[in-house]
Image 1 (tube, helix red, strand yellow):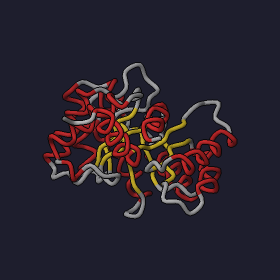
Image 2 (cartoon, rainbow, N blue to C red):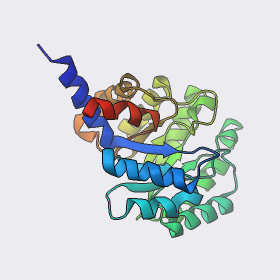
Image 3 (tube, rainbow, N blue to C red):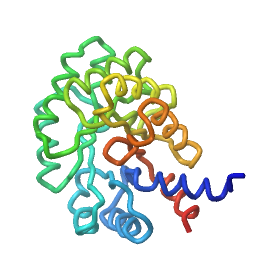
Length: 245
């Protein structure tokens, strides 16, 4: 018989290096971001920390030479349709030391049928990131229909993004299993070369396991690595650490 405690511990250990430990609070301070990074180094290394651009230098300094990546957000959270603005924001973030950029797609433009405007923004960010920096595209799936989620996923993959991400965490409906299934179906149809990130409202081991199962069913267990699969969360990190003690 399988030991439930062992299974839980193994699952927590599997998830920890797949996390983007996230702090996107309007009242975040340098001291808070530094403390989060120091805790991550001491308690268990996530894949990345995801923070506002003004905290990139603080996180970069606190993380030192560790393997933890610094991720930041651009065009956030509104998802505007100005490619020049997005390119500027992205270049500034990279110059400040970001390794990864989480870009909000112009989802309202896509809703309105203007896929060209949405594509222009994604292409601008991809150009700024080049081939050396990871670009994650936030679809804001809670604002889109199933057909629009599929169209947004296709658009992102065609533009060469490295990950499709569900949500900003700043709207009423964030990550859902239904949206994740659509996104992963599209990723699988394109050979799994694009990654997947679930974010927004994922707080427990059980929540996270649902997304692991979705990815495993479509792309296989070996695909689930930090290069292809992330979960953006802070509460989940807090939930995992006691399970690993």
